[in-house]
Length: 226
Image 1 (cartoon, rainbow, N blue to C red):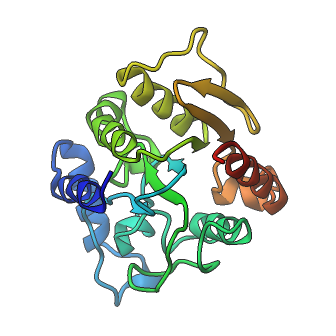
Image 2 (cartoon, rainbow, N blue to C red; image 1 turned 135 degrees about the vertical axis):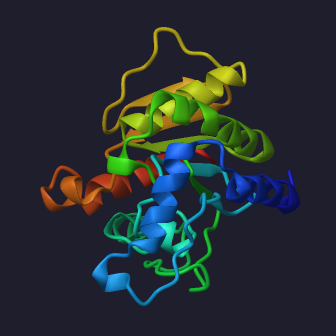
């Protein structure tokens, strides 16, 4: 494993234009800005993974948010979901600070790597199956490069399914397919896959996902990754 190999994957992610619908949407969101970010220059491209090349834990989301990662250029950065997630990672010792507002804000992940199944912001947060499958090889390459990786935390059912698909493509299969749920866990090849509700505002504002619930999953991942 090397930071250079991860950087190579990231560079290919940023340059990717394989999905015309997603390219059009991410670029339109970057032009037609919401009022609160009207004075900011948007990233408007596919968003690479972010974190520690020696990570033992991978945190997997669905895709960048149109006005979050698609604006800042870093996954889960600049939106409420990211605020919730990074606070949990900081409490559990995996992030050097509890907030993430910009690519140059000084945040580092320690022992963790953060990425997504899809790398472009999708309309309605719903990539098509074809768009998912075009993006999965990036996740497969990240998994292959992260030699120390032992645990994967899937944030939501889409990420859980994406992780299983990527791992199956690498030769690690589980039958029957384990069902997603908050707190679900499965051994897949050399990895422990853990499920957590996605830290979307819909989940966090309603109390479906609380800080204590997410902390418990992250701490279990830390324990599994020793």
